[in-house]
Length: 310
Image 1 (cartoon, one colour):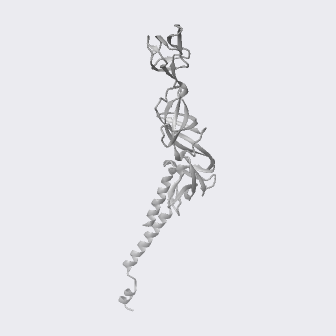
Image 2 (cartoon, rainbow, N blue to C red):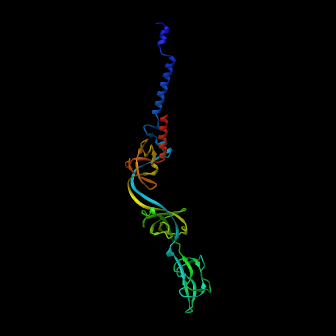
Image 3 (tube, one colour):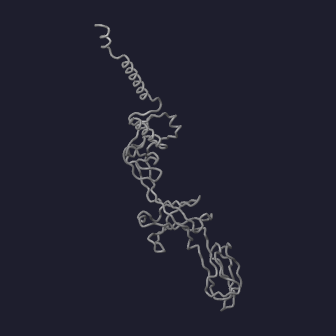
């Protein structure tokens, strides 16, 4: 065999060299994908060191049993307590001899508001305050006749009412005695529903009447208030924070932690109080799940999947 034929039977040396280079590079690349160091992905598992988790404010909690408080939000306004209002008239017709108070004055129970001279006996008698309060209206002046009209109106606003609007679809869950968290601006207090009444203006709703302590004066009449009414307290065999649940691959999932690994776990959820949610299936008590910034784990998985698609 001559030298020419020999070289014809040998592979193209340039092509062989190129092939060897590609194989070497590919092997190194896949080796790099398998070696993630502290952070990485493998079959829907995110690996992350404790240091990285802390840096990203990723924290975990154990799934736990507890009580779930279910509530409904209502709105209403502050109104006067009818028992704290008084419209005062003279006992007998006569002439008003003196008036001792003006609108806005504070009075104590028994204070003399005015003197009236009776038309029959021609003797003067006192008109006194029936309780501690403020003068909110005055219709009496010296020398005028008292012929049954209201002379003074008094009010004590230390106790007021919140009248909360309850629409027909809410009537089944709103009941007397339920706990109410009342708030407006920076003020809040806890009270209960005292009684339910139909709307006085004929509108298709009812009113939940709630006693309010206004001794500090922070709940003036007419104030718009928000009320969170506790409608049920349910025992739940398993609870996690609402922030632990994410939507991933058309499922609701939590990310379960085992050491440095975080795995998406499909779950079936039940009732929620806005802060915690009941887990009906997919998780057992004591398992650690991501409670804060779980969306970062989800984003990391989705990023990895997008990379694999290419």
